[in-house]
Image 1 (cartoon, rainbow, N blue to C red):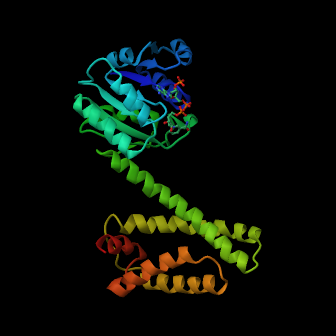
Image 2: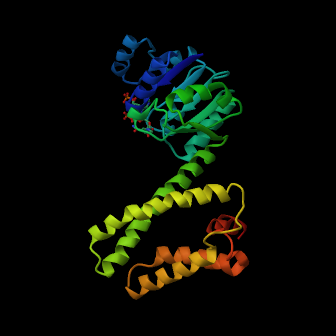
Image 3: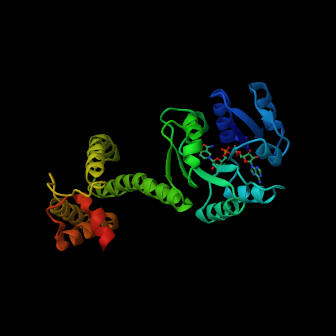
Length: 286
Ligand SMILES: NC(=O)c1ccc[n+]([C@@H]2O[C@H](COP(=O)([O-])OP(=O)(O)OC[C@H]3O[C@@H](n4cnc5c(N)ncnc54)[C@H](OP(=O)(O)O)[C@@H]3O)[C@@H](O)[C@H]2O)c1
């Protein structure tokens, strides 16, 4: 299998080095040619244009500024991409990703888009994740190449929106946690609790987040929300207590109010004895 890496910035260089180390046959190209020179010493074929690199390869990884530049690059090629598979690892929005996929499909090329969840130093790691979407069969053919770059890599669907939605969904988890700490700090500050005391108490609470994940993973994929150890109505009552505390201390209460409103509505609709995670089902059906 012949591979190419187009774009040898920090990330593209890491990808190319990793593939070469894994024993692949790799052609490389970079807009500023000097950055490509070092790859001659490690066995890559240096190409003077994207055309040459793509012509020499079956699977082409592009890692440049963003999807916008990849669309320009692909539009500037002087031959058909029929039979090639193009994998864009550049970051970008979904409209550019859709545009790129449409161009590649029109030319009869396979496509893959990858979201790299790592710094360049993490490329090649067993725990590194690159999430991909791609046209039918591309993961079967080239998933092992992506697996070389990140041991925990996965294929998550065909359409670019799947990648964007997964990013949004996972980002929301991290941001929800961050905003929880921020709002928590505000209510504690109002009560005169030193921020160091609050910060010192967070690790014990963070340990419970693991239990939250276990419960989520056990119940949401199977939609088995019965036999709750702590039921949704118990959470609703605790949220109401917390909401009252925020209000009585005049702390910003919109975050906890949102949680309480959602939970109380599900309780009112008959989910009171179920798991809190049954909110996924309730809010889907609402
Ligand atoms: N670095 C990270 O930690 C990281 C993590 C995840 C994802 N990414 C994504 O990986 C992509 C590359 O990031 P990077 O860190 O490697 O950036 P970088 O070090 O700044 O390198 C940018 C690369 O893009 C090329 N480039 C820019 N505009 C171009 C154009 N119009 N035509 C052709 N090539 C062009 C540059 O070529 P020249 O050398 O000629 O300027 C260079 O090879 C970005 O989309 C980034 O979001 C990076």
